[in-house]
Structures are given as C-alpha cells and as structure tokens.
Image (tube, rainbow, N blue to C red; front, side):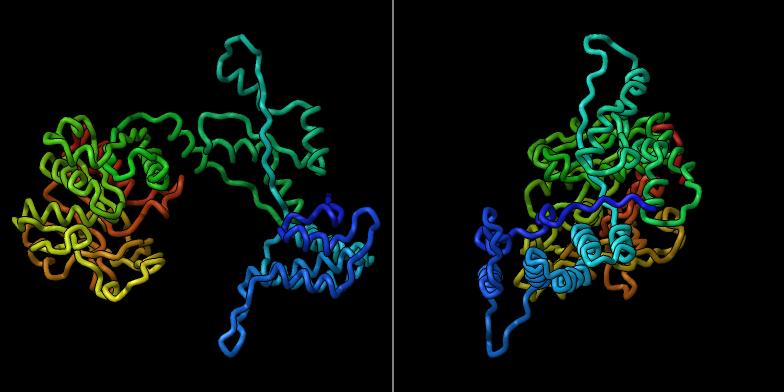
Length: 481
C-alpha cells in the first residue's frame, strides 16, 4: 500500500490563528482535560469573527472569515470527540479551499477514528506537501578542491543525516531528496529527477507516469551554462538601484540569451543619472543594446528619453516595454516629427503635443486601486513586419498594466515620419507594438511580454532584441531571426 503519514489531531492546529481565549475555549483546561460547554464555544467564536455590518439586511461574511469559522467549529467538535460533526465542518472547508493539505489530513484522521480506513486513504493520498530544509555541508575544510569533486562530495547527504531528516519529518527515507549547490538553478530539476523524485511523487499520488522527456531542458541548461557569445545591455530604469524590481525582465533576458547561446550582461543605469548628465553618450557607449522598462511618474523620465534618442540616432538595438513603449513615441515625436514639447499627459498635463494620453475610460476613474487596463488582452499583429517575423502569428495574447496610450490624433503624423505600428488591439482603438524599420532593430510594446517568457520558450520580443544585439555585434547587416 501507499506510505501515509498522518499526524495526531492536536498537532494540526496551525491552520487557524484564533485568539488565546478562543483557543482556550476549544482545547479546555490542559490540566483537567475539561471541555468547555458548546454555549461558551459559540460565544468565543463570535468574539473572533469579524463584525457583520447591516443596512437592513446582513451582508455575507467574506470567504476567508467563513472558512475560519468552519475550521474553528470543526476543531471544537473534534476536541469533544464528536467526529461526525467535525467531519462535516472539515469537508465544508475543503469544498471552499480545495488544496488545503492540513484539512485533508484532518479528514483522513477522523475517518480513521470512525473506522473507515479505505476512505481515509483517499484523502491522505490526494495531497502531497513538499517541504525544504537547509542542510549545511562542510567539505574538506582547509583543502582546495576542484568544483567537480565538491559536487560529488555534496551530491547526497550521508545516511545519518538522511535518517534524521526522515525521522523529524515523519516521512519514509525514500521521500527525502537532496538538491546540492550547483552553478545554475536550472540544473535542480535534473538533479531531483535523477534521484527519483518524479517517480516517487507519481507513485505516492497514484498517478500514471510517462517516460520523462528532458532533452529540450538539457539543451537549454547546456546553452545557458556554456554560451558562445556575450552581449552587454544598458537597462535605464527608475528603480535601477534595486535589481529585483526587474526580476521578470532579467529572467526573460536569460531565456532569450540561452536561445542565442549568449550571456546577457545587464548594466543597470539610473535614469536620473542620464537626466542630469549633459553627455549621456559616455554612460551608454560600449553597450550592444538599450532597454527601457516599465515605470511611473516624472522622476527619471527625461533620462529614459535620452536613452531612446541615443539608441535611435546611433542605430543601437532598442527595446521598450510598457512605459518604454510610450517614451519611444515621445522621443520620436520630439526629435523626428518636430513636435517640440511633446510628452505624456501623465508627466505634463499641459503639454502642447499630448502624444501619449489617458485612455478615455480612465478619465472618470477617481479611485485608482486596481483600475488600470490589466491582464491578458488580444493583440493583432500585422504581416510583413518584424513583429510578425518574431511571433509568427496574427493573433497573440499578452499581459498589460497601463492607463495611458498613444493618442489617436498623432497616429498619422508618427506613421508619415516612418514609425510603424505593427500591432493593434482587435478593435483598432489602441496601438500595441511599434517598430522603426530604418534602424537595425528598434522595437517596443505596450504589453509585458516578460511575464510569458519560459526557459525553453523565450518571449519573442526579448529573443528578437538579444538576437539583434548579437547579430549587430557580429557585423551582420540585419538581424537573422
């Protein structure tokens, strides 16, 4: 049969955090084993429940409060050994929170108490909790070793440590797997699968398994760890001092770099430094590409616009995302179309040329929380464009997060001066992708492609940008996508 570890009921009280008084009401006096009467339990339950405001009819409790109340009652009945009532409440919780591992174990335990071992196994076998613990290993102190030797020494924890981890985790030894230190996190799935973690998981949950297919993943890891080329990117951001602000974009660069067998070195430049620098060329020289990420507000905006201008005028591959897309339009309007003072109304509401303006449906929004144009939206990609070459289809769905858009009043002027909008919303109301074919690679999108990038499937605009940076560095006349 399956290995099933079920903890005794009192040890499973971590799901709910009632007040000390309420907890006392459930558990009773620990010394006398006294059980508090049901009436008192109900009173304490009311104390811990959020107030219900009434305007003629009572409003429903929030889902979270309802689950908390059900858990409270289930534990109270369980402590009184009224297992059938406890089971009813736990199942009600599970109906609302289908992935609650602790409640599944509670139900399995109670079913055992009721003598229904077969049904108990169904609940215990339908959930698997994976826990991580840190096991420090000191390898040959004071003696220098080759990396491969260190890896061999640390690959598997010793038998005694394995026994202790299993013992204190109340799990069988075959359920303990070790992820040792490696140069790349992308090696970890291969390490764990080699130890049989996938097989054990399928067996434990009763899932039929196929032979794992790791060839594509192994190829990705090989390209990531043994690149043939290097490109250096200037990321000009408002939050460049905090690298984690751009973690999704950094990962997208890694995925794209591996697809090009290229290491992507990202140089984080504060937009304000360029804004206050009369000769920003010194900061940007030596980079193979310029990237302008998302952002809000006026701080550093002019520095980002300088970065766009430098990339366009010096024919350096450029990629803009979200705010970077909007500022690419602003820069082009100012310096190519000749619209002096062109700007976004987010930055200057009184600009003479509002090439970026608030979307019509946003103008009546006063409460800004959660009201942007959010989530996945359809984008129609035009044929015979770089965008179509990269995406390969006419219809894509990408994630958005913005309030401002390209002002329709300026579409014609921008396009007359050579800017191409190669992606629109299905109704044609919004411009989603732009490119400037006069340059080697000048590309920007209103959406956040990085959110859909995956190790073995890099996001097309990030892949196109890195490939363009590499091809230009290698002296090619145009990108070879």
